[in-house]
Image (cartoon, rainbow over all chains, first blue to last red; front, side):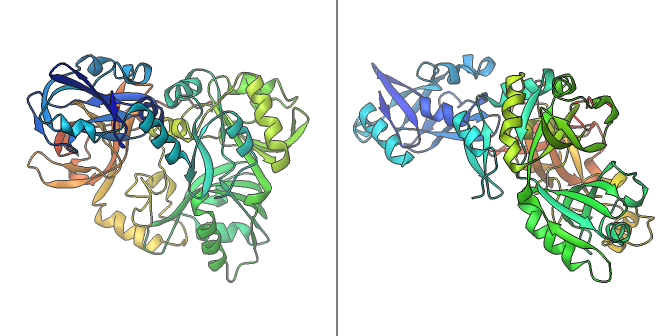
Length: 122
Length: 362
C-alpha cells in the first residue's frame, strides 16, 4: 500500500489498484455522510479529482494517486458512507487500472507517510 | 487566539480544536452526529463563553436601545429577553443580538463572538446625546448552554429555584446552582428547550464538570451548527451580514418598521416598500448531494438566482438541506431550483423553514 500527501491510499492487486482515504483523513473529516462516487470508465491523470467524500462539516475532494481508468466504484458506500470511518483501508472508493506503474514509486510507503503525518503535526 | 475558562477541559477531553472568530474552540469531542443527537434526545452542554457581553446602563438606556435596534425594546419587562438585529444606516446588519433587561436602566447585550469588538465600537459611536454607560464585559463571564429535552430535569437537581418560573426568553440572576451563583435564561441556539448559564469565569469549569457528571454530553461547535441549521436559526456571516438586511433574511418580525426612529429605518422601509429582491429560502435537496456555503443556485433556465448561505446534512431528518439567499421570484414553497455542486446542477425544492420543528417550552 502506498500513500499520498493528500491522504489517499492505493493498493495494487494484480493489474488493478484500489484507492481510498487514510485513517488520518477520516478522523479529520469526522462523520462521513455522503460519497460523491466517480463514474465508471472515467480516464484520469495523476492528481485529477476522482471523487468527493463529505462529512457533516465539509466536502473533501479525493485525487488520483496515479493515472488510470476507473473500472469500478464501491457502491456499498452509497448506502453506508460511514464504512469509511469504520474501516478506512477496506472501504475503497474506486478500483482502477494503472497506466504507468512507475508513478507508484513516487508515492510514500507506510513508514514515510507516518513520518509525513508527524512532521505535519509539528 | 483567545481561550475560554473551559479550554483545558476541552483539551483533556481530546476535543478537536479550531480557531473560531479568534477563539480556540472545540468543533467536536467524539462525533458531530452523536453530539447532535444527544441534544435532540437527551441533553448536551456547550462552551459558549466566546459570546460577547456588553452592558448598557444609565437613565437613557431604553431610549438609546430603542434607537440602536430594529426590534422594540421598550415593550419587554424586567427579566425578559428580546432578540434583535442591529443595523447600519443602509440596512445591513452590524450583528444580531439578545438583549437581557434587568431594569429600565440596566441591560446586558449578548453579541456574536467575532463581532463583539465591532459591536462595542458601533454602540459607543452611536451613544452621543444619551445618558448611558456602555461597557464590554465579555472577559468577566463564562457561559454554558445546556440544551435538550432533559435540560430542565438535569439542572433542577442542582438548584432550589423552581426552573418552571423561568419561561421562554426569561431569565433569573443570582440564583444558586450547585453552590455557584449564576444567571440563568431559558434560551439557546438548537431548537430545543434549554438554558444558558452565565457564570464567573472561575466557576465555569466546576459547573461544566458537574453537568457532565449528571449525564449532559459535551457538544462542540459542529453540532451547534447542525442544530441551529435544522431549526433555520440565522448565523451572522452566513444568513446575515453587513450586506444582508434582516428583511432579506426573513426576520421582519424582529424589525418594527413603524417605530418612532431607529438606525437603518429609512433604508429598511424603502426596501420593504419596493419589495425585497432576494430572500433567505429553505431548500431540500431532491437529488443526491450536499449544498455548501457559497455554492451557486440556478433556475430551470440555468440562470443564476442566488447562492447557498448554509448547507448540511440534517442528522435529525435524514435529509440534505440548505438555506439560500435567492431571488424572491423563486422563494415560493414548492419551486424547483438547482444547486451547482462541483460543476453538477443538483435539483432541490424550496420548503418551509425551519426544517426541524422547534421544541421550545413556552
